[in-house]
Length: 84
Length: 466
Image 1 (spheres, each protein chain N blue to C red):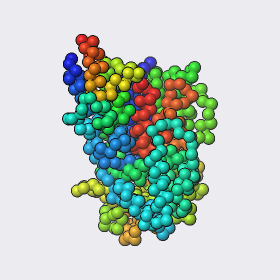
Image 2: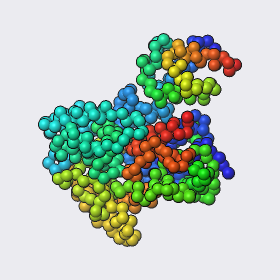
Image 3: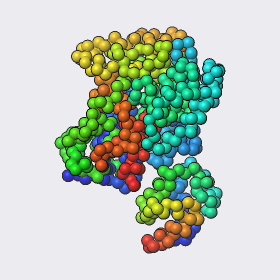
Image 4: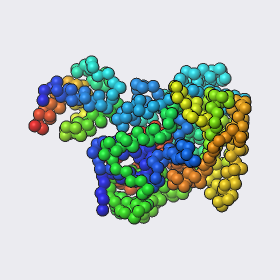
């Protein structure tokens, strides 16, 4: 999986959790919380959907890695590739 | 013995909402409901071919789509329910009616503020200070210390009439304590009624329940109706198994109970070290429902969706001394929501008053029927004092009617003493002395349709998903 594909996976999850958010021009380097109305309940859901849909585990101590799309891609892409 | 990850007691709003979260994330979950109809305190029934709602008068917490952090939009996200599927229609307006003074409000807070500025010009600065205190209060945490709401309000508003007019709707829509309430609870209620607002689907509660059940089923949740939990067997501080009404026994890693705190304690065997009776609520209600062929628009009652009325010098929210306390109440005219081109087929007027549980449950069958017949016209007459002059005749124009009392509430919901807002002492974090038994719904502390769903979601997230 490429980093861009990984970003798309995260965006797809956000679209499902928050269908009312405009996701077409999310800046990958900027914190998701600064651009979107996501609260801690929503972030927890991103983590749980990653586990449910893709079998990816994100331990609580590493939630901070999901702050922006870029950091998500950096952190999650190796995890996705390790699954194959 | 059948085994579940999570067993939920009660198929009300909080139980189903909790179930949706758990099933969605792959838990093996089952809801056990004693009644044949789902919904709990917000349910429905049919009588003589006519459909009636129980509980729902107006759904509080209405905000427009996209309003950040609002409970309504948060629960929709958490449940993955599309906002438009709720088919919410906004109220026309509502009113707090005291002798000689009216305060109207709708879903625009600025309108309510202007009403207060007009009617209580000397109080408006204090009122704004109160609103600031409400907005500054952090209601996202479960464990705030008790603070008297009366004291906080008096620190801002000095006119006791305005103070009572603010408290009246909040208490009628969700206080389990007499005369005063916890400021945290006050904040939640104030936001849900005045800062947010009222709405209703044309079809009423059925639309909301159907939507929730569909989501629950899609997510893979299991539901057993007509089969409640009769006993929670405890061993070594943990729930060991549940015994159902049918006699079947099941096991569950986690149990979420929505049936109330003292009611849950009563199910536990051996019993819990807690005076469950002492924590039973004291506030019970009666409600009359009158159906008319005419539309409220045609008999001069076409404006107010909800009217909170009080006839006394000081508003008293406490257990009724007589069978019914006629000095205050709540009137709901469900026709007065903006349904666009649609409208309910018939005019409906519902009147709720405080009632005495012990009196209503002490009557023998015949006396009970007689008491209902005797109180119904008196309740309607008390409400009428606060409605516009009208040609309506509550007897000859009425084509159907029904009435429930605290006895009805106990029978269909199992709530002790018919206390629809539950026990005065809540379990804010949902925990009980039993390590894997948790409380959700009314006795966790969130009330109303949106509040109870939020409670189910929060308790499922905190105690069964992490």
